[in-house]
Length: 226
Image (cartoon, rainbow, N blue to C red; front, side, top):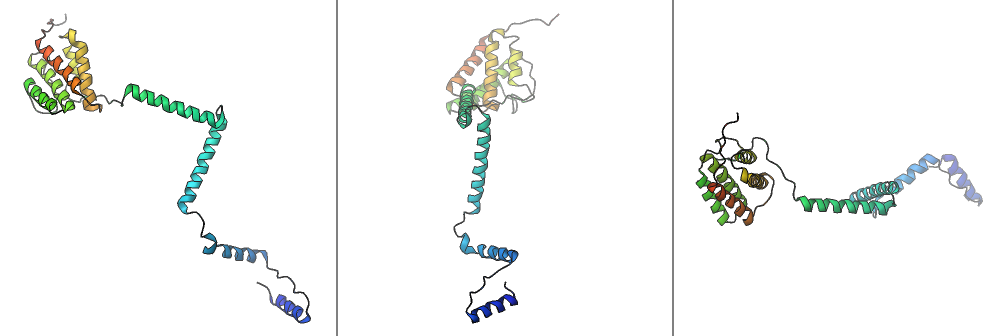
C-alpha cells in the first residue's frame, strides 16, 4: 500500500501535467497480495483432484524405482523386464508341476474323529458317499474302514489319536507286501483331508480295491524280538 507522501507526489504531478511516478510496493506486502490473489478458486478450477495427485506421485515413485533397478541390471530396463518374465514363468512351471501347496497332518491329528464304528460301518458310509459323488468323504471313510478292519483282525492295536501315516507304518510290519500301497493310501487321506486336494472316482476305486485285498491277505506273523 502506498504512503501519504506518494499520494501527494502523484497528485502534484497530475496537476502539473507531469508523468505519474511508478507505484512502488514493498516486496513482502506484494508477495502476500500475490498469494491472496492466486489462492482464489478461479485459478484452481482445473487442478487435478487429490486422488489424481496421489496416483501421479505413486507412478513417479514407481518409475524412479524401475529406473534405479534398470541402471543396476545388465541390459537396463529391458533386461529387468526379461528377468521378471523368466521368474514368472519359473513360478508357473513350479506350480503346475507340484500343484497346490500341501499341508501335512500335524502330530496328534486323529484318523477317527467320531465315535466307535465297525469297518463295515465305514465301508457302508464310504459307498454311500461314492454313490452321491462325494469322493473326498468316500476316500476318508474307506481309509477308516481299512484301519478299523486291521484293528478288528488284531493286526493293529486299537489306539485313539492314531494318524493315517502311523497306521500305515504299523500295518506294514505284518503286511510288508502292501507297505507301498498303505503309504500311498495314507498320503491320499492326508491330501484330501488336510491338503486341499480333490479326490475322484479313480482315487476311491484304488482305495476300495486295497481294502478288499487286505481283507483277503494273510499277515506275516512274527514273534516278539529277541
